[in-house]
Image (cartoon, rainbow, N blue to C red; front, side):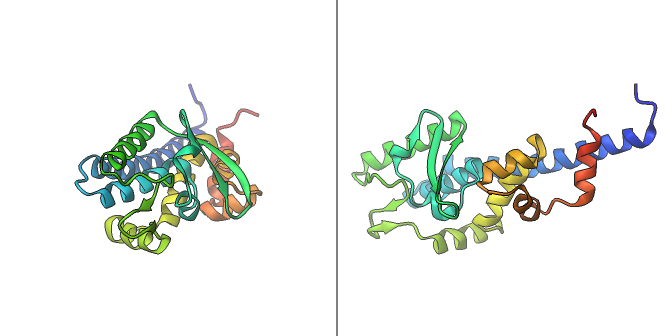
Length: 196
């Protein structure tokens, strides 16, 4: 039992912050997943799949738009981080892999399969970053950069900023601090739960 009431308050505060971050992430992911599953048009499936991949990988939308189906093995998506020019591997959920396979099967059935995941055969090009961001802003009131931040916050709230930094492909943890807007109070609150 805790005898220090201030420590108890700090721990409750940290838990409430982490719960709020996880709730925002979960609600957003559940909404996008539901939209994907009820999508009637290929363009809708493509957009919602891109949104789900952005949330689960934390990758930049420009990196995701270059992805090929061959970049996915089992539950790992591999891509090149365009800023650092380094290869990144992200483990994703089996649910996301199922959604990717469903999308791929749909493309094959319609005779529109291309090695690039987000290729739009009716336009003869990959979905553009600008188009994806406009639609994201319209549907979710956030753009893909904000989806990436939400993904990073989700990881940081569960495993800390160091893992979030690696997840986002940042070369410095200080970049992730700034990127996720982690304050000194958040740092102190998280540190207070560590047994020294």
